[in-house]
Length: 362
Image 1 (cartoon, rainbow, N blue to C red):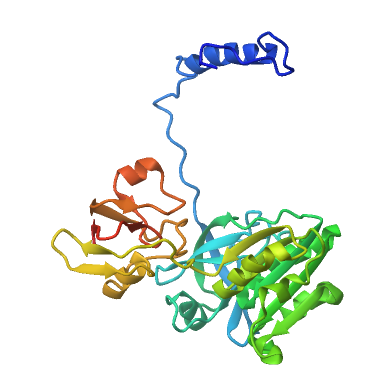
Image 2 (cartoon, one colour):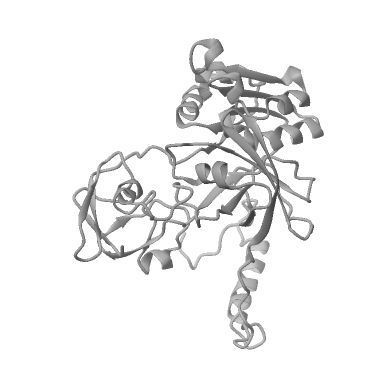
């Protein structure tokens, strides 16, 4: 069939389909009309402004595990905060200027405050240490409105798998599953009992549906098959935890009673399909080799520790830099084709072909 031949009737009758004829006629008239004077955008009308950041104050802080604290954040004026759904996170701007993503772990029905929990990572990027050491009740912070890349679909049967602080996005899911009467089960794993945040709060939802599992008690981390053995037949699995836990669940999924997997990573995914290349800091700056198994961001931060970053997964845009020369392999989920063509690149995930040199405006 060529472009000049009408599509056949939807029911196989030897004539053009009436619906398609109507749709084609409508499109032929509607598309040109969009550029007409009555529908064209008024050039004097200002473009919409970006959404203003939320102004928040820390109203409470408490320890929820041996190495984790919970912060309660509210509007200083007492105004209700924007609504959110289980799985959502905040992009929080810390006093130092660092930006970090933290899952909301409170109750979406509670609009007067947000709750987040942060595990201290001494060898991390500094955000968790800053929160533990400097953020206390009365501290003013700003944040972007909640966004959700780990939405809870409320399937009739669900298994929630949390590794340590990975309980934060799953706790609201468990509350919602309990509220609407789903067949749900939750497995919370960690090194020891004192490293499991919100253990009492999770158990209080329904002790029969909650399983707390520690490496200390069982002699090591669980296998994927062990975790998925708790899944009801036909369940959807929601998993948040360290990379080895996620990999184990992915490998064991096909042989389990579960039929689907939703997941959120703690940090960057392992580099796959990478080749060694080079980044140069400025036109005449030093050249830094990027191994096949490391990200350009990791290498750049060794030379430029002040280089901003947040998600390390290619969706927040915090680490964006300008490309001066070279051909990148864009692997992000944020930049538009126009931004890429203008030279924007996210070194947390983007790479280059073997032997290629990317010259960055740094």
